[in-house]
Structure formats: structure tokens, C-alpha cells
Length: 254
Image 1 (cartoon, rainbow, N blue to C red):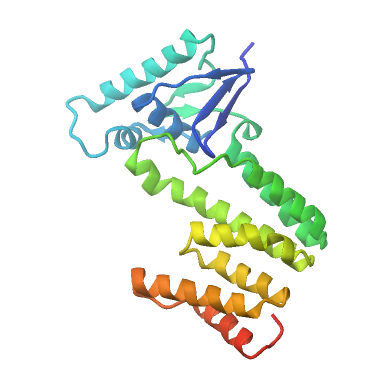
Image 2 (image 1 turned 135 degrees about the vertical axis):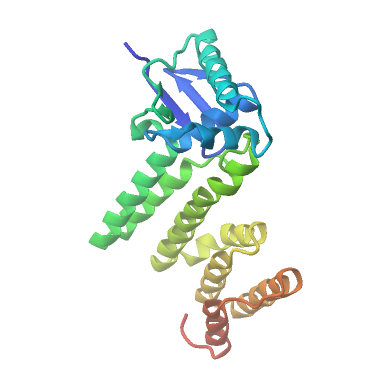
């Protein structure tokens, strides 16, 4: 019987074999496993894996080096009482990691977002907020925080990070629409300063402040993000943020 394995990338890379955590050595083994998990249930070409592992460094025998790394990863699991047999397969083009979507955290995250979509379609904002909160609870920190691969962090991680940001902004929008604007201001303010070029957080912060009758603070928030964008990126706020600013100046309803 093949032991159930779960894979997590929304934070540090983690693997559970049954209830036991498998400790993956830092370096190439960790990068290899992360690459396979992010393309789970897909044939990943060997040359793609070589690029994620070694970048553009020339190798005399890249396929041989990859095979050695795969063998070491298998040995790591076996040394801790686990096994990748039946999970990691050699294919005609490279390698394939197989797992049920419920056993991979970023796929569970997307499934919960789909549930939130369904709730939104029914007009059930309470359920939508609940599904979004469950999805966001899967995040333990920045994706693949402990995996060292410039190419993975360039090509694969940004999409996950954007999905996180979308889900978080959406949850705040739902909470504000439910009249809970006063309860989210503190968290929104912290996120806006932590991710200071993500204008969605600033838009939501300004909206929540206005709905609490704190227009002066909303205008100060706009001044702050405008200064940062101008000084550090040489750009103006988005049209959406500018229009919200004008709406507040006119004392119109936000």
C-alpha cells in the first residue's frame, strides 16, 4: 500500500508521509522537489528541471546530473521510512510527480477559491468570506520561502503570490461590503505598509476609513502612497486610486 503524501509550498516546502514530516536537505533536492510539486500531475521535461536546478551554468552531462539528483531525493525519502515509488515517475520527456489535488496545498487553495466563486454567484457573502478565509489560512508565509532557485522565484512564485493578493483583497472587499469596515482597518493598514506598492490594499484602506467617517486619514493614506510611487518608481497612482481620491475630496459616497 502506497503511503499518503501531502506537499506544501505556500510557505516553506514541507512534505508529510502519513503523519511523519520528511526532512528534505537544502540545495538541489529541495529545488527539484519544489519544481515537481509546482507542476504536479504533469510531465516536466528534463531540460526544464536542469534549468531550475543549475540555471544557465554549463554541465558536461546535464541528464546524468539530474538523474543523480532524483536518485538522491528518492534515497532521502527511503532513509526516513518513506518512498516515492508510485509517486515519482520517469517519463519519455523527464519526470512526473503524481498526487491527489487535495494533498497539495496550492491546489486546495485554488479549490477553496472556486467554492468562494460559487458562494458569490449565490449572493452568499458570509459563505464567500468563509471560503476565502479558509483558503488564506493555508498560507504559512511567502511561497517556497526556503527554496533557493532564482528561476523558480522568477517564473513560478509570482503567480502564486498574485493569487494570494487577489484572495486577500477580495476577502477585505467582502468584509467591507458586509459593513465590517471598522474591523479591517488595522489589518489593512499593516498590509498596505508591508506591501506598499500593491495599490489594492491602499484602495481598500481608504474605502474602509471613509466608511468610518475618517476622511482625513484616507486622504493622508493617498498622500503616502502617491509619494512612495513617485519617489521610488517615478509613477503616479492608478486611475482607480486617483478617482477614489477625487471622490473623497468631493465628499461623495464611497
